[in-house]
Amino acid sequence: MLIRQLNRNTYDVFGGTGFDNWTRVRRFHWGIKQVDGVFLPRPLLRDVSTAIEVCPQGSLNNIVIEESV
Image (cartoon, rainbow, N blue to C red; front, side, top):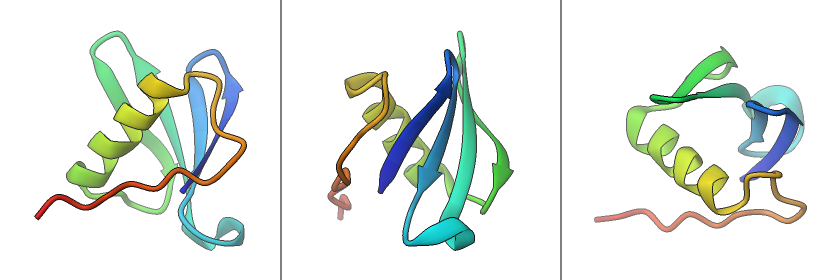
């Protein structure tokens, strides 16, 4: 997963190659919300939120999210 910051609170999330797996999310004071693109299930959106907290400027490299079993 690749996360790119567009502006202060808006991020593009790429789950694969190109825009086939693209999602735009926006960070609010109460959490994160998907605003465009491919639907992300709640657990994956939670992982994206955690990744944004760790790297608020986005990521230059892929972020590996380990699935919890």
